[in-house]
Length: 166
Image (cartoon, rainbow, N blue to C red; front, side, top):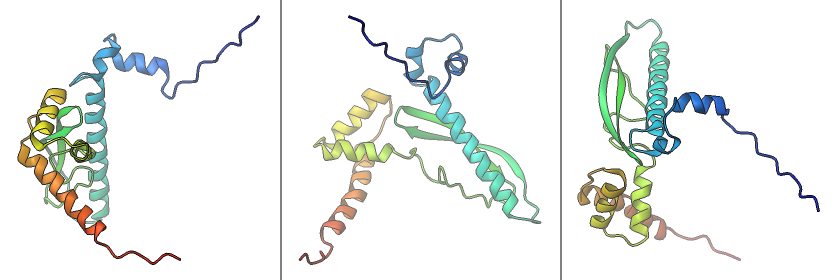
């Protein structure tokens, strides 16, 4: 009896590129804090922020504004802290979209906190869990702030008037 050969699905990212990205490191270290995935997040975020700056400067037309170096900002992601180099302009008129001026958490981090809270974890358990998994020290007050913001929206949604059904 002949068994059919299963074909390997073509990779989205070529193996050669992955080998180059790993550059001799173990594939298992790519998932570690500060590993390849964190480096990619940092590189992509900085590239997007620089593109935002290019767009901002191009949109000012004849205004005398230009780049003015970089500032450093530490943001919390779902795998740990990442230090980003944020571009600055001379006039200080650049408003970032990807990571807003006072934003300290990468998009998606708050959803993880809300998800754990919805599953019945206390604020202290969530803070301990985040420290255990990602090495991130998050105060129970921050967890409360995130969940309270969502709870207000949920209460408003639950109290909305319902449309009559036929």
